[in-house]
Length: 411
Image 1 (cartoon, rainbow, N blue to C red):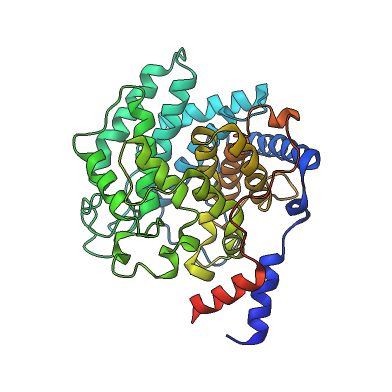
Image 2 (cartoon, rainbow, N blue to C red; image 1 turned 45 degrees about the vertical axis):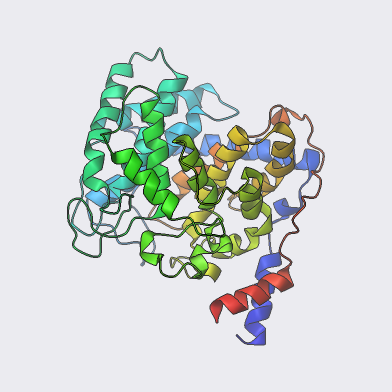
């Protein structure tokens, strides 16, 4: 790696928008504004049928997605995330509530997404986020008159899941091998975790997964953890645990959600990583490596094979862990870092995105961001205890050190 490229890496790790410098009341005000604008952006960009996102694109290069199944899968999963974001928004209004309800009608009416061919089955994401959105809606709105239809939709999605469970026990979205039913290709750890979270939410409504599905999935996910505590990107990399994408820096966006999914089903990880450490690694210690990948159109082209589409996914799942697993003091320490990381993806029109995907990325990126920002510590958004957080015990990676490590990773 030549000196000019090393300098570019160091500068990129230091580069950030002005929001990266915000503290205390200024940060709180910016987060409140971002939540309001993101909420209103989603409401204004809902499709007439209640869905969110379209297949339209002005780019000449896009992710492989066969018409119509794969694009329908992207839209359904995106819509599920938007329903959750509007329903769970920390600053709701009547328009957001109405849009969320209309989105739920779409999820119930349009849940049967097919697999277009042997290679692609992006509808795994439809199963995962559909189940999560339906399950969380049911838990929050137990008196909704659509509950019978909601539970029937969960049942339909759960009954179809075994046909998409990879032979190794986990879940994925591409099959480059036999292209069989069920798929033969390796699972992806974060996809497995996402499906498990959706299944758990549905089971909270009394709709249980088919026998054996959960055990195979949690066993596979637990086996994906490395001795360092990070997670393999997928089982196919089990012979390369030191490949960049499997190391703590490359796994930072996956680790919180993977650990969270294991915890939901009382599955002990191979190495118990403290919740605080898992979040801190993503939002502060290794955030520079994650941000280098943001908005790069080619998957895994950044250091440690990080892809831009890891970013807001990771911050949302870190927010789940922060809100549900950490004591208040640690929430207040880490939330400002998490919020600044999410604001990194904010656009002037109020939307958020981290990776280009037809037109869907604006919608699901904004949904992830609303879901993450809305999980602030109690009272934080109202101005309580927004003073700058104290320094954590583990120092952040300095730009020069990060550039040196990136050079070694790319050699």
